[in-house]
Image 1 (cartoon, helix red, strand yellow):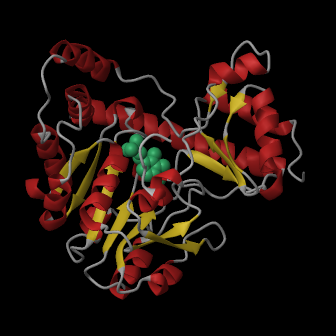
Image 2 (cartoon, protein in one colour):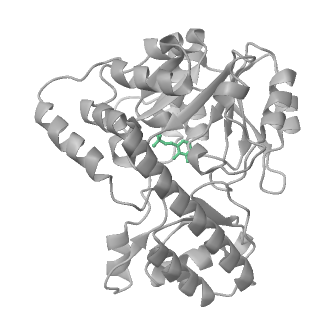
Length: 363
Ligand SMILES: *Cc1c(COP(=O)(O)O)cnc(C)c1O
């Protein structure tokens, strides 16, 4: 160790990147492998967005607009909210990190269901917050358990819905019930990275159905998944101006690159938005097809509202992960729990189903 890192940092695990497709191919002597591990959009970028990005790259010698005003305006218009109700960050994870920076003091409590998105424990640790986790019930959130875990030390409740990795959602009625039970000085984060893939009619847009009556709710969205801009790091938060103002105060200078801002804007023009929606429809059709095929093969499939599927194979998780990797499919295992598999192109999904067909669901 050099210097004296905080105990909270010394105790954190080092980031271990998942294996890349190229590494997996080399290790197993395969011509090629595919990565179905990060819930990315398997489609190439839209030509119109790629062209806008190429042109914006010529301005890379200049700092971007720190406040991302054009993107904020476009998003405020799209969601029918005030300009002071939107902030833009380095992915929605960046906005969540700003929320921790703005709200969480050492010793404060942060409540979230677990298993869920892996940044939650990391942000708790780096803030020296007390992470209060609530076990999943049948792979979904137990929101009564979450409400019961809130104390007068709780600053934030984080709900990723659809949940990563299980793909389950909270319905609007469930969220409203939770918000009614939680003191109104606790921020309730509705992290909707996979919003565009949700088809459950019991899930309304929380910007319309929840924010007007609950100023302590914050909705997070991202351009990383449905919009296919994972590499560019751009996401946003919608909420009360009081929360947005606090988030803005702790933003790193120029946190969102100008290229990312241009890509977000180019994705929001009506023509591009329509093309992207069509691609999402294709992913949803594949989700139905893959789910049905997996169930027919005998896999325990959790019905997913996202662009990935989750197989809760328990102790068989690492074994299934390795078997799939040997066939050129890199997935995301959770040891002793299950395997999360991102949906790919139809051809990639065919390959996945063929590989799964060679594995035993009962092992
Ligand atoms: C992918 C993901 C995000 C969004 O990440 P970005 O920082 O926007 O790329 C947020 N929440 C969950 C649960 C995710 O899986």
